[in-house]
Image 1 (tube, one colour):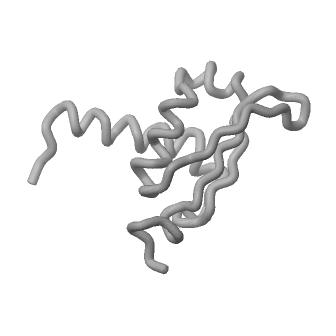
Image 2 (tube, rainbow, N blue to C red; image 1 turned 90 degrees about the vertical axis):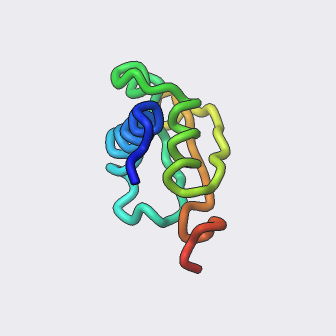
Length: 92
C-alpha cells in the first residue's frame, strides 16, 4: 500500500523533524520525552514548536506538554510526553 503524495510528504516531514531535533536527545525513541529545544535551533532549522509537538504525536502516539523556559542561558521550549512505550500504542 502506498501513501498519497500529501500523506507521504507529511510522513517525510515528521521524520525529518524527529531526526533533526529529537533523535539526538532520544537514543531510545520509545522512552519518555523530556527535551529542551532552543528557539535559535528552531529558527535555524525552520521547524516550529507546533510542528515539533505534531511530530511527537505522530511518532509516539502521545501528546506533548510544552513549557517555555530558559535553560543554560538560552530561551526555548521544553517538550515532555509519556512517549511511545507508555502511550496507547506502546509495548507496556
